[in-house]
Amino acid sequence: MSHGGFSTLFHKEVLRFWKVASQTVAAPVLTALLYLLIFSHVLEDHVRVHGVTYTAFLIPGLVMMAVLQNAFANSSSSLIQSRVTGNIVFVLLPPISYLEFFVAYVLASVVRGFVVGTGVLLATCWFAPLALVEPWWIVVFALMGGAILGSLGVIAGIWADKFDELAAFQNFLIMPLTFLSGVFYSINSLPPFWQQVSRWNPVFYMIDGFRHGFFGVSDESPWLSLAVVGACLALLTVFTLNLLKSGYKLRA
Amino acid sequence: MSAAIRIQQVSKRFGATQALDRIDLEVRQGEFFGLLGPNGAGKTTLISALAGLVRADTGSLAVMGHDVQSDYRAARRHLGVVPQELVFDPFFTVRESLTIQSGYFGIRDNDNWIDEILENLGLASKANANMRMLSGGMKRRVLVAQALVHRPPVIVLDEPTAGVDVELRQTLWHFIRRLNEAGHTIVLTTHYLEEAENLCTRIAMLKAGRLVALDTTENLLRRFSAHSLRLRTGGVMPEQLTCDAAESGGWWSMPFDGFDEVEPLLARIRAAGCGIDDLEIGKPDLEEVFVRVMQGQPAETNELNAELR
Image (tube, rainbow over all chains, first blue to last red):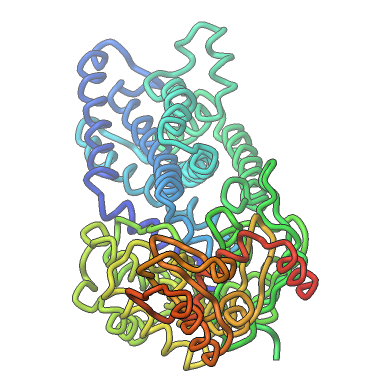
């Protein structure tokens, strides 16, 4: 990693989203704020979860959802744009290894996730008192969740040949996985069947573990969540690295 | 001294298309080399294989002695490629694009060289303009600049003058010539054969993925093209002369080897009572060479292929 290409690629990827921060940071923060205003208005007086108010429960979920969705958006949109416009050659011609390529794109995705997540937290934390009982879980799950979605973004950005194919990946996989993951509810409130279904969704463990850091309580043990999320990250990393090594759709 | 580029037995197939068929080619250091061929002949595929954008099915390619697969870092550091497609990153200014490209090659603090490139390519006034705001010609200049940020000893230009104005061509060739004089090896593909004829000392021609000609520009011209007497006659061209002449658009073209053949030719025309309305001497040109090689007069092409093997 000492060849310089990696740090420039990482820096370029961060700069790319920062230059259009109104779209890539401000817009998702506003969306999360709207979710909070609407859902807390409707449910605040009716629901308490894990002993906290609904608004307080919802905030960490929205923050983590923003981290995940924006991590995915960063690598996937950058790669598809570069591939469709052809400027991906600027990255493929220099002496950058597939490992450097992977880490740079994923790390930039994590940074975007952190920036948007922090923005959502700052915009929403005024609406309910938030504790930070075990903050290290917050950092661990945000980092790992961001890296997982960043990797998925790399896969989607390379697999999709057109913007609508990427949109399909986003709408039919990423959105359902993130929305049906306990952002808006505790899975304990679901019928048993749907509780079981939710336990097959790895995003549930990311949200649940992340939320544990705030309240010290969660649907599952954070250690179980850590194991599931860690295994997902390891599998996706191996898969994505092999994809990049094979040159799939990048080096014919 | 290792060759600037060494291509050995390189083949590449895309589905049913044999894009490259056992190409053997060596470009020496310091050469100004032309790679010619019609669309679809395999020029861009060969360049892409050299740049690591395409993986050859068989054979090997090396840049300055570094294999493009096993020693790809060194190979890519020694190679600058100007892609054929007019691509750019719309997020950045010209200077940012060049600084980022330098960084990809591990080069920091490259401002002096970037300034020099900008100056030489007539881009200095556009340094801080966003890439989206530039005209097509200016974007093409930036593509050239991006290929040069790491001072590669081998520079490949894939149709750099396609659809660009005269001024850019002149600026570009002036700069590229200077780089060549300073020792950089240049490989050029172009459909403007006049450019290739003026610039390249050696030329390879590809056809349907195969190398069908490889020689110095001078030898190719000598072998496949000749001086010709071109004339428009007032009357009917005498029959005994038409067997050696070709007619196109009212002009008769008669090839000759030495200038001492011109006078007897004119004398025969006069003797046949045929007046001459207009007359010029045509020089050998690469276009004629290209057309003849591509039409593949089998004997000549086979002879060449035998030499290439």
